[in-house]
Length: 146
Figure 1 (cartoon, rainbow, N blue to C red):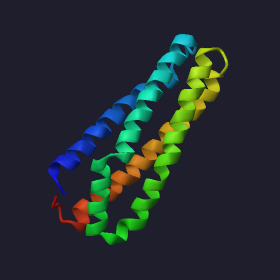
Figure 2 (cartoon, rainbow, N blue to C red):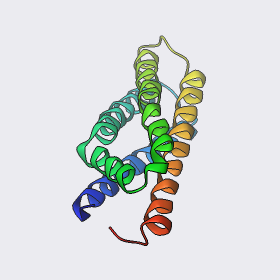
Figure 3 (tube, helix red, strand yellow):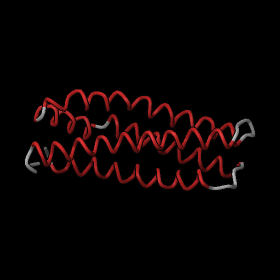
Figure 4 (cartoon, one colour):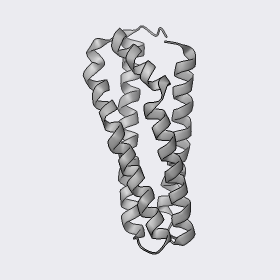
């Protein structure tokens, strides 16, 4: 696997992680209102864009294909994770739509918080499972070779 492919994936992860941290902080903010909802909608739109690039990006696709070729036994787990991408994206798109409605007075902050927090938890679990597979394949099965 090319070092630049892994670097691209890690860079994408850093951007997503940073934005998730900012979103989590926003979900804990008690001052829900129009400016808050607009900010949350903007962050969610940005996150959806990043996740579309991350999930559909060449770096991740190439990386997963290389993992499957090197360790075919990981195929089912990797395919399961790949299938989750659309559901995760949909959850954040729905959150962005709800935040936009809230900023016009047509939504409820409690519902938005709950939806976004569930989506964040799902994404974190998903990323943790991916990371675990990568580390398992990289260290245990590939002997640390890149």
